[in-house]
Length: 288
Length: 292
Image 1 (tube, one colour):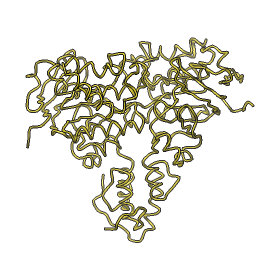
Image 2 (cartoon, rainbow over the protein chains, first blue to last red):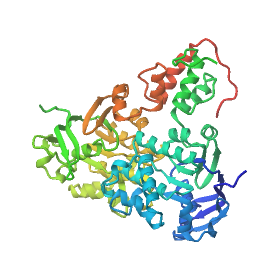
Image 3 (tube, rainbow over the protein chains, first blue to last red):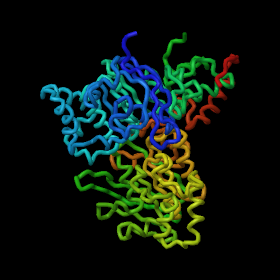
Image 4 (cartoon, chains in turn blue, yellow):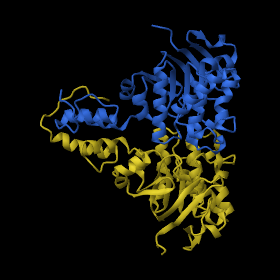
């Protein structure tokens, strides 16, 4: 196997004064170009995990007790020369977009990080165009950042991290304030980036989108990894905090002995299975 | 013209922000007592602007636009001529981010603040606080500091502070943003308790599964207009409306419609309707490795 984009082992974090570990012996690997969906109820440790992977903990936090190993493309995180070098490889989009919007105008927000890196102007312009297209923010470029809606802020923040062209993107609920169309847009952008080799870890509660867009899922609870595997493996297991409705329906009918087909993860898959079960195709599908 | 059961009436309401953005472009809408209304629509369609008119946080910017609110004393007042605190006891507004409105060190003080300002009898305050906390599933947390509550719990505390004031109408902007399924349900259940007492709930939401399950009425917004208004089943079955608003009904409803079982909104409905069909399908299915 080629070098993992991210390798984590024995990662344990305890915040000062907390009664339990925020992360408890967390270990997993992510391959380059993979989309890993991270799910779990509130308090599972999802955001703490992303902050560790981005180097924010322990370097900039009030250094909670942390131990364990994190490697980025085979290189241990402590070997990096500070956060600025880590951010060349790893980009973090935090849960609250307002925390990382620092400029008054959207275009400046996107350009700022690239200028700080000394990226040549033509390349800045190229990435700006690409970001505007990928995240559908072309119409927002000259708007004031404070006047954006929550969903618009989220797309701008994801785009600004994209502009720095990290090999790994860590996204903490990047679509929480987006409507369904906006959510799908961001998920599609994630898919495109992954096809280009970017590794994406995305924390999401929107299980129906994750089921379709993630290559693998990692289910967490109370600081521990409860399950890791393909969306089907994880969502059919007991560790899933929630399931896509179509999967829920199929599993309930299967309990009753009425669904003798592979449980679906999406509506089209459910329709195909239904047609086979009822011998009454509703689409122009060829019977097997 | 005034409907006896109406708690909020909007006539031709327009709202144009300072920068020239026309967020509402002529809305007529009546909310009746005892309704559970979900306002849906894309980001930027005017949902929040609409909701902020319900309690006078915003007022129509056109001369002939008007919003009337029926207060507990039965009087219907125009929000334009009424001070905000005279509406606060009737319509409670919970912001998308609960931290914008929580400012005390204990849940008890947080809930006492509103009733106290409205001149509530101090001897009944303790009961009001404990009953309201119970209603939102935070029983016994009187002395907890809100900063130690989870985001979802703070959302419920913010809802409780509106309920503690005895508001007839509670308006909640995106109550479940960023919440997991279990917490989302607790938040909606808090509102359902309020609704079950014959009171009125208005939510703004993108979560169509919850809308289908809890709301009695759906108002779909597009570009500052009301595009559709009806029961969840009615609105979710209008393909044109769904396309225009980019709304996706819950998966259960989409699946059921695709396989010719219209009118289904929830997982429970879908399972029932699909079971009926499968039981009448020729070959009985045997299945051993059930999922537990």
